[in-house]
Length: 274
Image: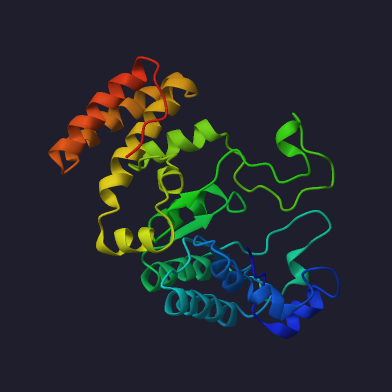
């Protein structure tokens, strides 16, 4: 759930009515979610609505509060910033931040909340996303549509985009690019499906034990993508990546199981996970 901005005065100016207009109710939503049994939450502000230092400190304090109160910090932190869109100009937002400041925010967030996933969307152009991957981003989108009904239509609905897509590449192009950069594109959702959320995820993540699941699951889900969706060029590069990474799995038993499951995926079986 995006806070938009932690600056109360600016928040109320931007949300004068409707269900989001109550600043306190919106800000405390994560606490109510945790109290209600939802142990996996994601934070985010829209940088450029207010002074970025104020909103960044608010974001970090919110993460600290959740961990101190419930023992579980945010599973993810999103870092969007004001970008051009229909009828919106950056001239209207004097607090909009440049690339270097944006990347600085990501780097400090990674140091301050090392266990969280940091998300950057297709708001950002390719060059910025490439730099962001080197300073702390762990999740990026590809092939995104931001208009109403965008995924059900072949073209974007006119004048309904939430924001302009600055990285228009297809998902396959993004996967190929990540492989070229030496990253392992992972489509894993195993932690959610295995119930490794909340305090269970936090303990594994902080101890580093989560890597025993993340690495093998990344290779398995990448293999599925290569078999079912990838272009020939992406498939070739992806198979090379899997062959390079498989021997690096430290646990011998896990490595053997992963190797067996990769063969099963090639034979048509699906949905394996550690």
